[in-house]
Each structure stands twice: as structure tokens, then as C-alpha cells.
Image (cartoon, rainbow, N blue to C red):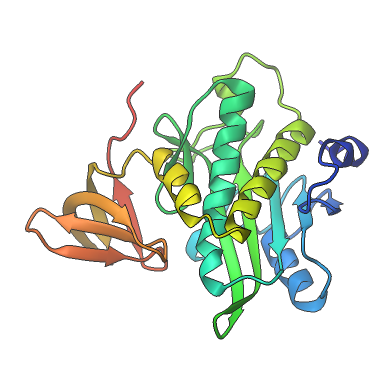
Length: 264
């Protein structure tokens, strides 16, 4: 399903993100390619890399992400004067943009499961990935990637779903969906630039119903039971165990979380 770039560009006119769009039928990884562009092109801020499919799509910790035609696979480049601490908020911005696009256009609630999964009910419909380079306290670039199962139906993947299966449509057009995500991401980027950290974080927490709930965390092979209390300024999960211990869990660690957060 090749993108209609003229339609997409018209829909996002005035947005920083999408002022340059590079579209491919197939690519190794939009994230890897976007990183190479960010590292070599000083004027790549706002560039979007999108592909009909990925040959070697990847998720957090290098896990393989199956990316067939029919899904939406893209990465955006943020490369402007920002502090390194802004990177986690760009991840929040993309998660919110995807969730709010689903809610606004399909009247379906999308939820965030820490650190980077987007769920419909209890099944994963999308994932967010960030890659960055910093120099001192400053952010050289941040590439924010998203993989969304729109029309593609992941086969044999336990716990995954496709947005099309929750609608009465025969297919979902990629251009309006991507345009909405980029417009919303652009909005939240503006809030981040204005240092409205609390607004972005609170909206992210609102979409993350596991906050304040009991969860089971498998951390480096050890199971911990406790309360998902909060997230800190680095985006790490603050877990209060049943024994009262405070554990800070980074998304770079080998961690999986089990909970029953949404029942509909």
C-alpha cells in the first residue's frame, strides 16, 4: 500500500515533522536508516522515514518486529537545540499521538503499557522505539520510531492485535492516520520545547492505567510483585514491592510486566 505523498503533505502543511518525507516500498529498518540520516545530515530535523514494510524491523532491546505491508512503520528525526533529558518526553509524545489518533478517528481507546507498548484492551497494537545521541547535557538527535499494526494481522504472535480487527472498515488508509500522528506529535513537541514537562507526563500517565495498580515484574529473571507507583524524570518505573522496597526499573533492563489493566 504505497503512500500518497501529495495527500499526506497537504494534510500536514505547516508541521515541522514531515517537512521532508522519505517513503520506501521496503527498507531494512526505518529506525536504522533515520539514525544514519540524523548522523550525516545537519538539516534533517523534522524528517520522516516511512516504509510499506521492513525487512529487519526492531523493537526495544533489538527484538525483531514483524513489519509486513499493511502496517505503518516510520521514524521521525528530532535534531534541534534540546536537553538530553528531553528524549524520554519525545517517546511520551509519540505514544500519546498514536493513542489519541486511534481514539479520535476510531472511537477506540488505546492504552500505554510501560515502557513503550500501545494496547487495545489487553493486546499490543503498536510499539514505540527511541534512539538518541547526546553530547554532555545536550541532545544531538533523537529518532522516534513507531510500528503500528493497522491492516496487517500479526500471525503467531501471542498478545498482538491489529487495529482493523476492532473496526467495521475493510481497510484503514495510512495517509490520514500518519498525518494525525504527526500533527499531534508536532503539538506535543511544542509543549516539550516550552518545557511543559508536567502536562506531557500527566497525559501519558492518564493513558497508562497500570500506574497505581499491582503488577508482576520479571526483572533479570527475578519476579517482583508490587505497586506500579510512578515514573521518574528519566522515564524509569518506580515499583514499591509487597515488602515495601522501592525499586527503580529502567527500560534498558531485561524486564517484562504482567498485569490485568484493562477489562472491557
